[in-house]
Image: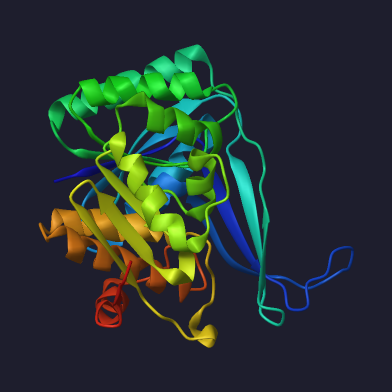
Length: 313
């Protein structure tokens, strides 16, 4: 089944390699990649690279709409954006191979209006009406002009129309999604789990605390970086990790998006939930081994499947 990804606050991702990077100093930089992106768009690209079918939707600056559509088409992803006035933000990642550090510079982009929100909601409902029961994933932050209550209303409208909703976000948007009652699956990391719990969560308690979220959502996909990931449902609890050597890790930006790409692509293949999680973890690991966002391949993911280890509670 086709997957629809929704990126409300897209970005053009620029990755630079700067050996010996220091704040306040002059340095030579090499451009590793320049990619029209945003979390949902990264998920769509990943699904396509793993052999699946995806449509990318959401907001985009009017001047960059053609750039996004053209770039996504190169990866086999169809585009169905709602264009708005203003420029799409650029996010810059600085990789220092000597210190093995990653520095993120995040810009603020366009502001959306009530008309923009209504326009996108209408487009999403039209698509969902043609693909009843299809997976729809909202991934990333909210743009200026879109409050958590606007987000909650958009989710509710999509769920009422029959979408199978997943959400990967943070802050007040995450709280709004969780409390909306419209979301089937949430993908928090440890920081986001603590946001929902309202307290610091010791590692020995993360599974227990994540399971408590299943009172409101059917599935919780808890990602813990190098420590792997867990799937929690009322009737299920299992986890996997894919161990990587220190020198195998090149870039952790976008690993969560890759995790979701693996999860949804495995769902398209009709595999059991345990195998879906294994695919998700292997895809996240493949992304960590790539220098660029969405630089992994199906062959790399398939090789890493055998390396995944089951976690014990």
